[in-house]
Image (cartoon, rainbow, N blue to C red; front, top):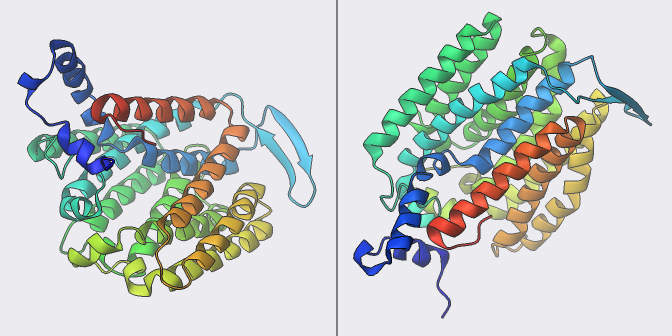
Amino acid sequence: MQQSKMEIVKSVKEPEAEKSSSAIFIQRLSQAFDYIAILRPLLLIPVWTMVLLGYYRASDEFATQIHLPVVGNIGIILRPHEGVLITLLIYSLLMGAIYILNQLTDSRTDEINGKLYLVPYGYLKKGSLKIQIAIFLSASIILAFLKSPLVYSMLVLVSIVLGIMYSVPPIRLKGRPIVDLLANASGFGVIAFAVGWTSQAEFSTRLILDSLPYFLCVSAAFINTTIPDMKGDIRNGDITTGVFFGVRKSCLISTIILCLAILTSLYRRDFIPLTASAISLPFFIYMTISNWNQRLNIRSITMATQISVMVLSLLTALLIPLYIILLIFTILMVKLYYQVRFGISYP
C-alpha cells in the first residue's frame, strides 16, 4: 500500500544514527527553513495580491495604457513605487506572525485534518515560535509607524488585532459562523486592499467601493476553505461557516457570492475581479453540483479555490509584471523545501 503524506512526514523523524552523514547534513540544513515554511508562504500570495491590487487601483500613473470594451482604460505598472514594496515586507511579517499564531492555536485541529505538519508533530518548539511571533509583529509595527500617513499605520494595527482575535480564545472568531467569514473577508478583501491603497493614495470613499468586489471574491474562496477542515473543527469545538451550513449549502452560498462579485465588478468597472470571477465560476458551479448529495468531493472544492486565487494573482502579475518573479520564486522554493525536507511533492 502506498504511504500517505502524513506517514511520510512522520517517518522523517527517524533517528539520525540510521541515516548517512550527507543525509543528516541535508536534513539539518532543511530544518533551518522550517522557520520560513511556518510562515506559510503560499498563503502569503493572496495577501500580496490584495495589497498590490489596492495599490494598483489607487495608482494613476502607468507605463502603458490599453483600452478594453466595457471596463475602459487599464494600465501596466513596470516600476512599483518604493512605498508598496515596503508595504509587502510589512504585511509579510505581519501575516507570517498571524499564520504562526493560528497554527499554534489550531495544532490539534491540524493534526486531525492531516495538515500543517510542523507544529502538530513537534518539528518546531512552541517557545521559539512565540518569540518569532513577537519579533515579526514588533518589526511590522515599527516599520509601519516609521512610514506615514497615520491611517496606514492604524490599518496595520487593525490587521494585527483582527488576526489575533481570529485565532486566540476566548474571542476566537474562527469558531463563530458568519463572523469568521466577515473577519476573513474584511481582513484580506478590505484591510489588506486598503493598506496597499494608502501606500499610494489617501483613504477615501472610493477605496471602500473599489474593495467590494474583492471582499466578495475573498468571501467565496474562504467558505470553500472551511469545508475540508470540518472534521477537525467539529472535534475541536469550532463552529465555522462550513460546519454551520454543511457541505451543500456552503458550496451553493460560495457560488452565489462569486456571482455577486461579478456584478459588483461590473458596477465598479474593474476587469480584474470580473475576469477572475468569470473564469472561476464554472469550477464553482461544478463544485456545487458534485457536492449536492452531501458526498464530499474535496478535489472539486480545492480546485475551485485554487483556480480563483491563481487567476487573480496572475492577472495582478500581468498588470505589475515584477510580481510574477515573486510568485515563481515562492512556489519553486516551497516545492523544493517539501521535497528535500519531507520527500513529498507539494504544492
